Length: 168
Image (tube, rainbow, N blue to C red; front, side, top):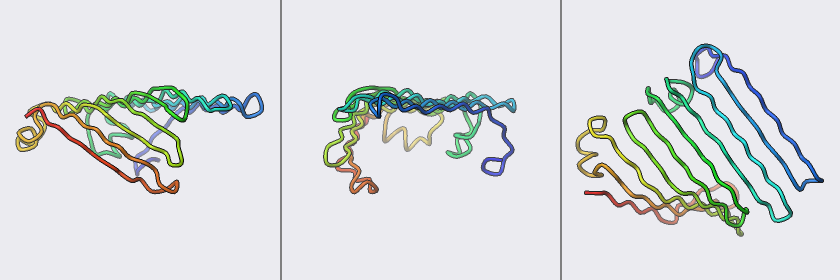
C-alpha cells in the first residue's frame, strides 16, 4: 500500500563497488505490475580518483500513478534527469512534462566545491486553457528561468538568485 492505495511493483536494484572504491554503480528500476503504467528508473555511476558521475534517471507515468498522487496532478507525467561530468563541474539536462499543462526543459550544473552548488537554467512552457487566465497573462506562454543555489552545511538549501523572464 502506498499513500493509502493498494499497489504492486516489480523492483530490480543493483549496487556494485568495483576496483577498491574507484568505481561504484547503482541501478534501480521500479515497474508497476497492477495494470497501472508508470516505470521509474535510476542508473548512476561514480568512478575515478577525481570522481566522475553519470546519471540517467526518469519517471514516465502515462496515467496517474505514484508521482501523480504525490503532486496532486491527475494527468500524464514525465520527468528525466541525465548528464555526466566530474563532481567539480557536472552538467546535465532536466526535462519534465505534466500532460497538456506545462513543459520544462533546463540545463543543470552541479559544482562540488566547499559547498555543493546547483545552477538550473531553462524554459517553462505553459499551455493555455489549462492555467487560470491571470497566470498565462502574467507569465505568457513561455518563461525563462535561472536559479543559482547551494547546499549549506549538508542540510540547508540556499537560493542565491532566481531570475524569471516571461515572454509577455
